Length: 404
Image: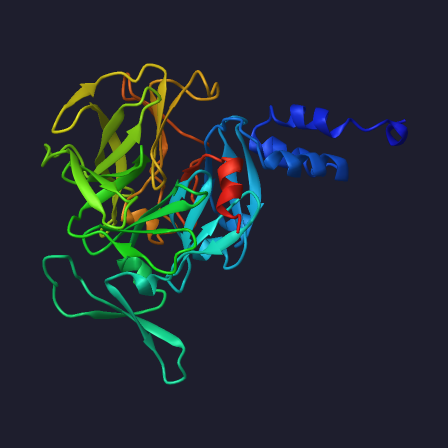
């Protein structure tokens, strides 16, 4: 009977598939050729809001496999990613469901983890502080790295092997939708966490001096809004040939913690979030390293321009996602699997993002009402490199980023 049953029309399949979360949608698309055809057609204009997922790697999954933990389903999916192996890369950003990775030559790639597509980003050798060094045969051999800001140069240049530069230069990266179906790439890099940017299709990075100490960015109303470690928020207009900057939030602000984030609330406000840490020793043994545990969050609404903000004691039905990904503020009403007035966090300290493979991860769900926390998964993930990040798949924008 199953073999003779008529197939559902493609338009009906697409209506059904449009109600699914992306993990279920991908699984449905592998059932048969008819379902796969509906899945491929739907991908071009699939707009269902997706619950964020946690992406990480583990030794048991394989070197080319990323694990996708779905908060909506409380289950893990395995995704096979392109070469080089994801377990050898650093993961320095996640936006729109796309990953920014760094390979063992310190070059960056934009990866669609759902489809396995990948494109190269402008070469790291085009960063202002980096120069390539070639061997006698003309092959890239090493990098020269200069600790340079707009105001001064710190010491003599250093020379790094190809795989070593990423330990000293790379910090965090973002991908934002831009005009004319292009995407804006923003790179926070050393020395002193400066900014460079490019657009998809560019051959090089453009440096944004003279400011530094950046920790997080969003793209809002045509402005690149960047939060500094001092609590300042700078707004860069990147739409013209001459980049201009305006001060959205002045500083310095009181030191509330080592990590600061910026997000846009569903109601349109800018949010500034400070994350403090408690340190503890994993084991009471001589020489044991100190690990870091998230302590508490302080959240402020930013409005107007020029040091106008107020502290928020409750996010009501809003939810935060913090980590080495684009910071998000969502509503639990739109995402039923999420808990209002909670923050979902992963570690983003350089202790974890630069190759530490066997340390306990600092991640969980923080209740902002009473500062209690729970694990995201149990038992605690002991992930390899790279560190876990949140991704929020957006099929429409993910596909657009890979459209030639």
